[in-house]
Image (cartoon, rainbow, N blue to C red; front, side, top):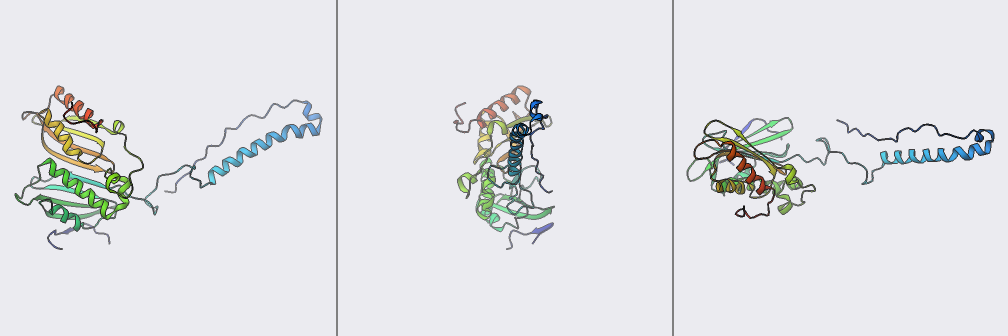
Length: 293
């Protein structure tokens, strides 16, 4: 049953167009005039051309109507029975000063996620509020979480990554059909992603101005377990402080934002370039030891 703008307490329980590329029309053949004087020679000269044209037309027709695996495939739409929506997990440290916001969606297939809240509690977290909203055909589940022992938002990068991986693991457990669209599906899912993200193509890193005291670091790259912790360690090695983060997992791609500073100030151009170079070197070589650069 679709839920819309529902607040719950965690303590209680277009037709696809197909275009065929027909062979370009060729000019009429240059037949010798002698053929027209003899009916038999005329037929013998023209019939091979007609037969060739007919064979080409038959091949084109067959390629349009064939259901063989070699025929072109088209992306599935939401109306297809086999369509699987993209799973998305967002961890936001800036939206609420008192709590860490976790938001996830998987088309219209998610509900109150009681099991996910229990898993978060096992990490020493308290889900103080949860909402489920519906936007079009997509349900978005949003949690406000704090640490059980302090009642404050989560600051530890390792714990933030554990939250992300716990949520993704629950998605794989209760919605195994999303396995092909998550990097963790290769290890823990029922089916590994068919198309892997090319790290060199997918990696984009930018540092933007965000006031005199901090800068905004934007990273987009291929997702993998432990990614957030690894990136923060790279920053720590060059004395970059991470003040807050927005961790966004969209299928096989991680789109993360970090508010960073150096000795309480925004990064200058030289330091920004050094940070970008270090992260790009590390992200494009996931097998490289983090201490080797």
